[in-house]
Image 1 (cartoon, rainbow, N blue to C red):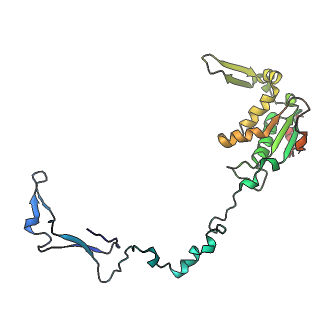
Image 2 (cartoon, rainbow, N blue to C red; image 1 turned 120 degrees about the horizontal axis):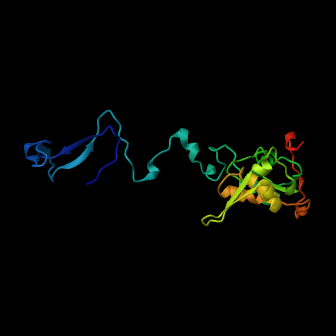
Image 3 (cartoon, rainbow, N blue to C red; image 1 turned 180 degrees about the vertical axis):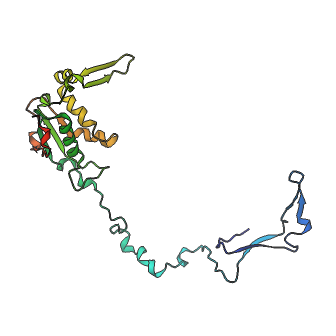
Length: 239
């Protein structure tokens, strides 16, 4: 039985020797309790259309379908491999964020407030200071921090700020104060503060490699020729 796909204006009719709803085609069902129309096997359904509504049917030959004149420019062969004329928003490509081309910054953490220093470092690692900043792309720079053991905090945070870690076993919680962790692993304090300001997920884990923290004034990144980290916040320095 061949059925053509036409517009909704078409009418569904049956052609048979008997009337569409004859008494012979009505059968009573014991479950429903009323008569139900049953088409005979000899009836062949077909589609007939009104004289006023046009019929739009699909053709087997796709070449027979003509594109409107005002839309032919969309299907030009020259536009297939050309620039994207629909999406005009700029998005960085792989060549726009190559790690070997990114700048390197260095900052001395001596007497600098921990939170303000970490926020400045996170801004440059994410690339928020650039006009090409894209939240889902690694556009930032590398930051080197020296003299991590001399970072400062305000108030009573040296004795009240706590750092927790867990071994994964029952009762394996370890708690240290800021002063205790600074004497043991001073680099971890700055890393912990900056990591908390980076996105969580694959992008954040990749951005962690952009931070290099060292205790003492020396670092092994002289070949990258780092420049001073620009700091605009004057309150970052401990008075």
